[in-house]
Length: 284
Figure: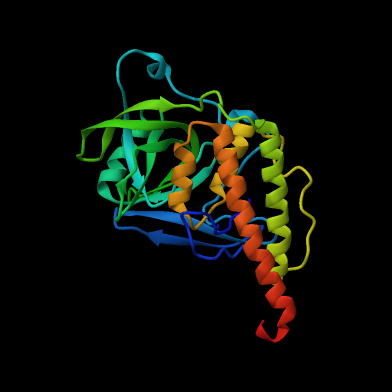
């Protein structure tokens, strides 16, 4: 997994790529909403602040909606606001300990194991577009806390809040990419994005003084353009506002073009940083 802060038109801070693979430790970050986010720290070629796993199969982003999703009646979904953006296909480890979310987990474990993850922050509040998280593994502790692993499924748009206690429940509609109106071919765009990512990995290793390592030829892992665009978006760690914008887009080509521009800006920054490092080695 590749995770690095990024440079884009809405984000002016400089990127520092952190390309890693070996899990060194796992920190627990508490939030005001009363849950803990397990954040593995990696070292090596690939990295993730949140642990993402992408097997070589398209069914990671396959819709797992129940029959309710295809019915005419409104869809109600428990909502879990988090200070992060979950993408389809991403793996999210969580620890649940606040009472209201423990109630939610007890309910989920007796139903379809799915809830809505929605990005939230103090400035903008709760976003209207989120991603379904499906519980794929869980452990209930003696004090009624839960450790769980969730996988991102389909996206949704919040239409209205049905209730707020003991936890949020929203009426939602499913969100899917529409046929692209862009002139550029999505396969071509995906290939270009993959090339930029490989270049960013190589030069970030150099800037950060890490040993050169071979970059996999098939960084996409045979993913089709749409799931690949979600995977790329999940790597833009440190820029949740940009990630949320990518999640909300309903056009794969537009998403890939935006990611290509972000990666190009990041590569330009890293190239300049590498040149300064080579010119002034004493500054290391």
